[in-house]
Image 1 (spheres, helix red, strand yellow):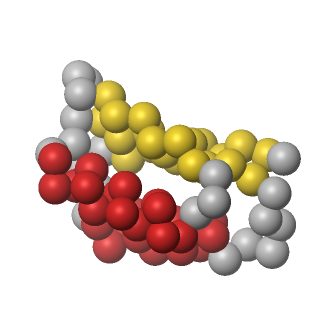
Image 2 (cartoon, rainbow, N blue to C red; image 1 turned 180 degrees about the vertical axis):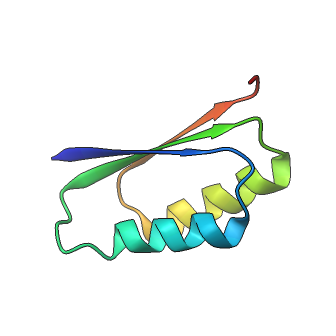
Length: 67
């Protein structure tokens, strides 16, 4: 298994979604996604959680509320 680390700081949702789709479409499937989100709003976190639950088997969502 490999770990993929992705960080997000106020990027538009469309960019993040496209990046996540790209990761998820790889042929190698034995990975975990570690997504670190800096200083998000609650809507953004809910959107991410819902998306990750639907698309990824193994993920960790880390919310950093302070910059």
